[in-house]
Amino acid sequence: MARKPFTSSTREIPDVSGVPQHIAIIMDGNGRWARKRFMPRVAGHGKGVESVRAVIRGCMAKGVSHLTLFAFSSENWRRPADEVSFLMQLFMRSLQKEVDRLHENGIRFRVIGDLSRFEPSLVDMIRRAEALTARNDRLTLTIAANYGGRWDILQAVERMLAKDPERRTGFSEEDLSAELSLNYGPEPDLFIRTGGEQRISNFLLWQLAYSELYFTDTLWPDFDEKALDLAIASYQSRERRFGRTSEQLCAAEKAPNQDEVGRNPADHAQD
Ligand code: IPE
Ligand code: IPE
Ligand code: MG
Image (cartoon, rainbow, N blue to C red; front, side):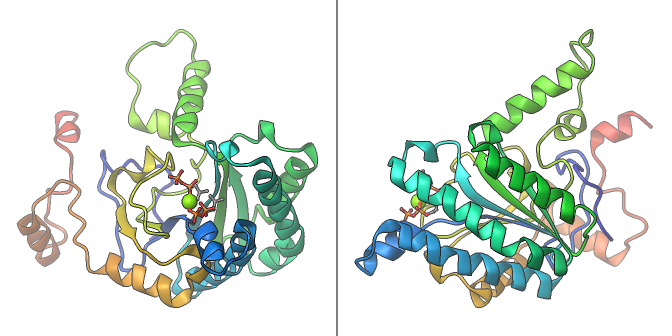
């Protein structure tokens, strides 16, 4: 069953199935992949586009409904100007080339992040691609571009407050989640970071609260469908307890309709 968007995993226990509904990936290691081959760093970014295609294919084959890819962080502006400019061009060229194919494959395309620093022509292209694919429902592909988790939380707070300027207290997690830029999808079940680093780098700070984390040394340009299968297999070997004990989970599995264990004490208080 499809999970409701922005269900808060700290407030309600989500339905979890064998296949992660939402996979979020930090695609890291392009520069090192190129350097290992005595090529300029940007060659790694070019090659990384092939991995994006492979992962989209893999997600569609497995029935993953949401895939979110970190393409450019709010901190990546600190890179040399020619690398930033190459990345922008690559984004534009890839979008131009792939948008029809995304649409034909039933993919809904979305971009999250602060687009105010982007060239108007790129923003226009993004908005057109989003509009074209808005009704597709096979896979929602979200690209995080000039995205930062802290930026996202701040803009969500501002929007939440603007909705009712009189209100000062009594906000719920759901009130805030509804204003986050990824408010149309469930929280990620599986977070993958390639390239060997074990950090979140200001990605989806709010939504990763209960995601399963998977780190691999594989560099992004080497990440393919097989590597995705390994990550999913690792996910499937985990026990997602959401604060409960292992014994409670076993009991709930044996008597699925009689369990109260899934509920928050806070919810009982409202009964
Ligand atoms: C990730 O690869 C791509 C972006 C951040 C755009 P990197 O460019 O960070 O590659 P490494 O980490 O230097 O190898
Ligand atoms: C994170 O990669 C951002 C993207 C993949 C777009 P970085 O390579 O920029 O991350 P840090 O700065 O090394 O943590
Ligand atoms: Mg990196």
